[in-house]
Amino acid sequence: MTVHGRRESQDFAPAFFDVAQSLEAAWDVWSSTHWGANHLEQAAQRRLRQLVAAAREASPYYRSLYRGIPKDAFDLAQLPIVTKSELMAHFDAAVTDRDVTRRLIHRFLADHNRVGHPLDDRYAVWTSSGTTGEPGIFVHDGRALAVYEALEVIRFRRLLSPAMLAATFLASDRYALVGATGGHFAGNASVERLRLLYPWLAQRMRVFSILQPTSALVDQLNEYRPSLLATYPTAGDLLAEEQQGGRLAIKLREIWTGGERLSSAQRSHIGAVFGCEVRDGYGASEFLAMAWDCGRGALHVNADWIFLEPVDEHYRPVPPGVASHTVLLTNLANRVQPLIRYDLGDSVTLLPAPCECGSAFPAIRVEGRCDDVVGVSDAAGRTVKLLPLALTTVLEDEASVHRYQLVQAGPTALVLRLDPKAADEQAARRCRESLGRFLQAQGAANVTLDIEHCSLQRHPVSGKLRHVVANTAGR
Ligand SMILES: [Zn+2]
Image 1 (cartoon, protein in one colour):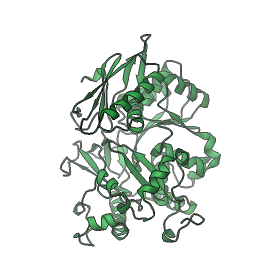
Image 2 (cartoon, rainbow, N blue to C red):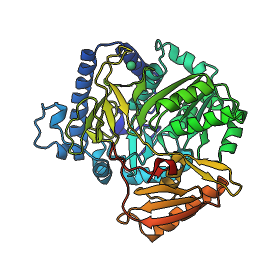
Image 3 (tube, rainbow, N blue to C red):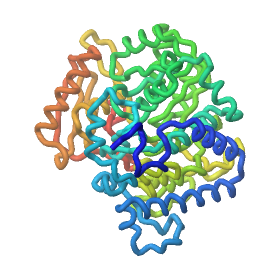
Image 4 (cartoon, rainbow, N blue to C red):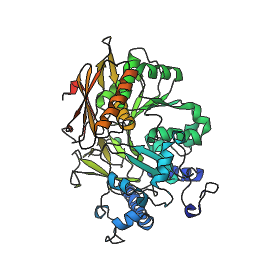
């Protein structure tokens, strides 16, 4: 089917990587960064019309979903909502390239040597469990990837002009991503993709696993000496403690955080210890760069490339200042797997007052994952800190459970609650084995694990399922 990376049916599809495409996206993002709200809205509406037309034309799922909706209706509120489970159940019909099938993707995902490589020479594939606790597979075309990259570089890193793109890539920074490694996760796969596209950067970009014991991670970072570090807020906080204790000794120019809510206490602690700026971002496997941190306490939505609609549990809009139950994402950059009014699952608050930075891009706060760091005692009575993202990766990726809650019952006791509707005895056995291996690797094999099949506790404010609850936070 593939001849020199091109197929007849896809001659007009964007390439996985193309310099002209990247420059066009960079120019567009740069020039629109200083537009007013009206211009942003117009660009988004124009892109929405093109996206809806393309989805109707090439996706049998959307064609059938939009049957009965007038073809000239481009008011977002008129379009039906799609959920992750529906989209995954109708995967082959929802995508706009008939050659991209679930079967093909499963073969691709099974091969961990292909992390960051293109599927069928064209597409990036990322997997996620997301905040809804349901696994998802997301396919992105080259144009979407060029837009995400431009948004990251120009808005998130505040580049002054597209000409600085090359300079950024040639700068002498050493970049470290401390996160989930090995799988086709968005962060890990994006680093591998960049290493593949820019081989001269390969030595200056590395991914470090949060699953390993803290002392091993600290040793690796000391040896690598990164100048830029991207990680989760809880991991950033833990590394700040290591730096404060003198075990970690790295000089950072900037720290980028994402994936969880960054509290102001975490921000000031991390920033003070490392003596550098902490920048937060909001991204997902569905759209890599949804909002960026202006440094004045707000995340600004890239409203020329996405629509984000904060809604309540009945999908009705919630007013500014109120935390939403979930948020609907429309990805205006990606055509291969249209996401239009897609239930992302995150709780988001639209900030009522304009941000003092003066940006025309809407300001939000993301409630995000609010799981705790669990401090347990090892056999010698020393505290071992277990990061929530490490615990959830072990349970979701290794043990394949998604409806669960890990609760600390004491200094050396954990209780795993499994939803009886979604997990059987075999799932319980997988959890026991995977968590057991993880605790042993952390030097905390003395910690006991009880498994209960019972209902799960929700967060009192957002209504979200809390996956990891520490002892101090109460039960
Ligand atoms: Zn701002």
